[in-house]
Length: 218
Image (cartoon, rainbow, N blue to C red):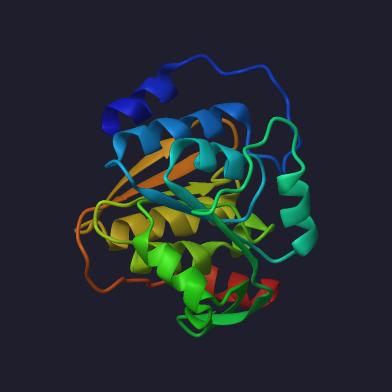
């Protein structure tokens, strides 16, 4: 994994421009390269759908996507040059609701109450966190992915160019350094890459700034 991250960090930046809400081609390429490193038959899971959905379908044995909007799922299936949904794939609408993380309210996906989604998350070896739409509100989804993913899973968080996202990603990496390797991938919107080494209780001790910021964004 470290060699792959170094390879992408050392390559020239692409000049192609895409809308901010779309995962750029190089990030999608990285997803597929990561999937190729995983054991045969590995499945993938994503918070948010779009171009990445088709990359995960192309590279994994099964891809699961959850969205807070049925419209986005429809648009995902209609994307040009997309991969048709297979029997092993799954997509579902999970509305954003108020979830709690260390006494802080965060609008997120209550996957723990969605049996099918939870089981697929717990089995996935590649997880992309690219939703809720506001990157600063993705901490709960990242925490959930890190907590529920099996050992050996790779978790990728998009949009670390956003200050709040970068702060909670680096904090969770530091506080759980005994169970995760972490790399910053400085391409596109910047990606945080977590490799889960072993199971165990997740730690999350937000700073005062993060605590107040969560309440202001609630």
